[in-house]
View 1 (cartoon, rainbow, N blue to C red):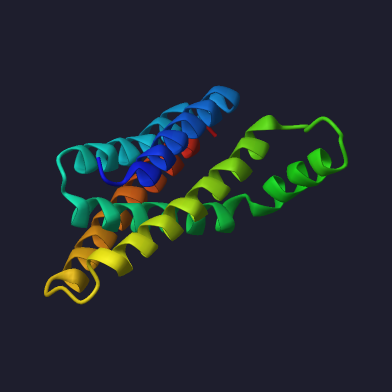
View 2 (view 1 turned 180 degrees about the vertical axis):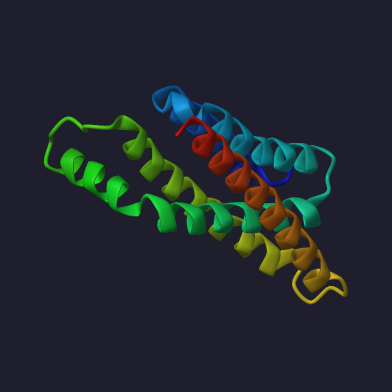
Length: 155
């Protein structure tokens, strides 16, 4: 596996999402499905589909970062502030969400760097990125709609 750094970040993302699901049980299935996209990334790397894996590695973290910044950024920063002042976090899930943000940013950067080294300028570079971005957008859109309907049904 040529992309050890990306595979390591994908495993870290999977573990952090599962930890997030443990500390935030009402969102467990959502976090499980969020980690599934990184499992797909690992399979793509394992089968040496680097072009698709790198595109997933850029699109999935970008979509998650967009989603988290629009929904819970202030809660994450509040928990990180408590930790930086050596206080116990009130809600550990937000602290783990901050770790997920860091892993996502690192994953995006690592995949973008490798993409620029290996794939940029190839004939189908933009079509690959576009196709994966649409797939990831639809995937996260389905997750958000499914979970919002689930919350509304309980509410």
